[in-house]
Amino acid sequence: MTTTKRFADKTAIITGAGNGMGQATARVFAAEGGKVLAVDIAKEALDQWKDTENVYAFPADLTKAEDIERIVAEAESRFGRLDAICNIAGMNDLSYTLEDTDDARWDRILDLDLKAPFRLLRRAIPFMVKGGGGAIVNIGSYAALRGNHGPSYTAAKAGLVGLTKSIAFAYGNQGIRCNIIHPGGMKTDIGEHSGGQYHPEGSERLSKMIHAMPFFCYGDPVEIANACLFLCGDEAKLINGAELSVDAGMGTC
Image (tube, rainbow, N blue to C red):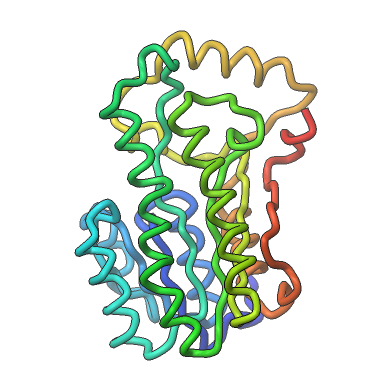
């Protein structure tokens, strides 16, 4: 990996850092000179960071308010400032249809994919402002733009768009930038971490849509990591409240 230390002397909280896009982002940020608080619910997945310089593993359940407090308190005490947050942890709804989405599934998806970023940012932004500002990247989805997953995942990611723009508007004059990335198909195991099998009707509908596209590819998580690095860096200082699709053009279909 060729690095230019674009994130030297900066600090970040990255959620979902045990695997997939969160793992790749933590690795890229650290390689570029940053200090990273790597958050994940899976303690064993965080063991990979024990010998990585400037990456500090922090097991936490993002759906618990007390763990949100612990995460930011750790960043405050360990770093003394916070330059970036990447809200990457999440799960999908396994393409469950409206009729088969019960309250428990709806709540589980919304709690992690929307409520957790809201809580983390509500707690962390005053700390970032005190330090002179910072950059936030939320991870949305192609589903937020096209509605191709089930209602809970689609609603959560669309809601995250609204949260992103609200924060960008409210805190831009205090040095806070907030943007959202919409990945397309990615080489991750999000299905495995989403708790079960895909809904047959919903997944068939999604599969038909994908196969009807003139092109489709599964992206590598490092592509999302590189986009996060750019949006959190000085080169993106005028980018605030933006939606960036990293999907090989799926959003054009």
